[in-house]
Image: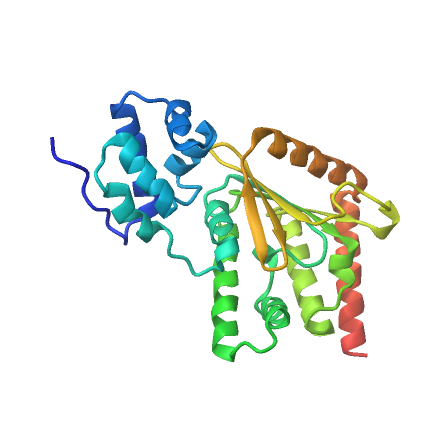
Length: 279
């Protein structure tokens, strides 16, 4: 029987590699849990590899070839799945985001990337690296705007944002930029494309004070949560961890303003920025 062929990098290589992994695993008569035991990972992680929501690292590709008797097939092809326009710490999360059916995100300090405007994204990226060449900033902004195309679909993915009031109050890029981005968020909410709630300063202490989080659900793979810090980030797939952070998000929504009151606050702050920019 001929072995698996090299994958075409132009045709969604991660999805193709995941499909081939599922095909070979089932042909060997292994469950996801059984294969995971051989790789020292969870069955859920194997499912995420097969669904294309997780990256196949070179060392894991080598172990897969050994466990499944596929020669060096996965080692040869995993490189095509690891190319990304995004920083290393965020690349896997961005690619999983593009495959998700629902995203629930708490943002403590800045407008989430999926609802940013070009001017706001430029200000954020310039703040991240004040000495970067303008061409590099242009590339980063282009990558950020490419992510926003997820919202072109009228319903998928579901996007539910909880914004700390600090997101609205931290002036990023100037008052005109803040007025524009907040109006953009409000417009998405008014068109029922996103659910937005503001967690006001008056809510006091809460369970997510240590940082941001993004919960992602998928049609045919276990959920993931992405935790992010300065130039760092990690994906978690442990069911207990995901369940704990989902409960955290539920608590945030309970403490936040209603979507209607949140929209009114966002529009009022945007109006303040606009008036202060043009007295």
